[in-house]
Image (cartoon, rainbow, N blue to C red; front, side, top):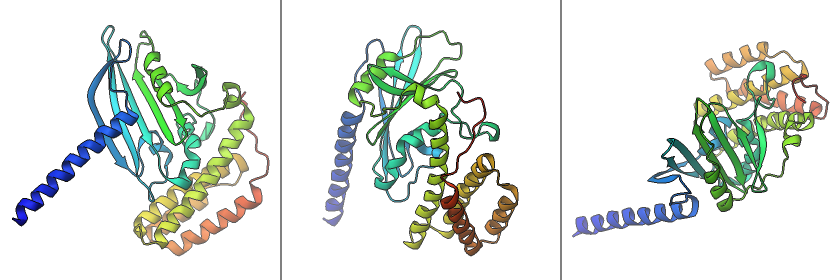
Amino acid sequence: MRKIKFAAILIGLFLLSIVSFAQGLENYIIQNDIGVYKFRPKPTKEIYGNSGAVISADHFDEDHDDISYITRYIKPEPILGVDVQVTQHTGGDSDRWLLHEIEDGYHDDEMETLGLLTDGAVMRKIDNKRVLWLGIGGGTFRWVSNNVVVDISYTDLQGTKPEPIEVVKAYLAKFPSTITLTDAELKASAHNIQWIKDEIDRRLWLCDKWNAQSLAGSVTQADLIYNILRSMEVFLYYRQKYYGVAAQADINLLVGYKQNKDITSIQKKLTEYKTWWSKNKTKSITLPSVVK
């Protein structure tokens, strides 16, 4: 009898998950053809702390789960596949960085142009709504709608196929962009400078967030050290690039602290960096002349 009851419970949970998934799809994914683009009814759902288009920006993921719904549309003639990813972020404090983090994918990470807007990135206006766009071997459209991130991408290595503007417009109607930044503002020196300073701020904020998780017993010491050092290293490169403070000696020290699992010395360095930043964050910085 107990086995039958347990099996019934499992079936009930399974059916509940199916209903929840279907409701999620209805809320986030357009489940029909969009013009000539045929809906491929094989959407997937990913529940991660760190999911969606902001993964590469090190979106803080330890105190919440974000949900991504992913699907695809196909244009028959000529064949063009369009990938759509809609992510609901629910991280409270971390969501204030969403626009900054999706823009991270449009800023360079090479030392020569560190933090500068990637060549070719633009803020397009589609149906009177603003969308980040970059066309390399196809194109990527990305925007935020409050705490939802929409990412639409396609591949066209020859550059001969029309972009899937119908799909973009359909999702803009479902999730109107809340970006107010214009293309001129995106490319201006003032915005690049502010984005760079915000990235330095965010990296030190990330260190504090990981510390809080460690104090709460939610992460291992190994995870704490890895993630704090990751952001501290980014901080050091930005400080070197824009404030003229050499990074290599400190990077060598941090490598040694990591090898020795010396969290005390790491925390001491972090306090030093935060103190330095509080004294220097209002200072002006100069960008390379490539920025208009």
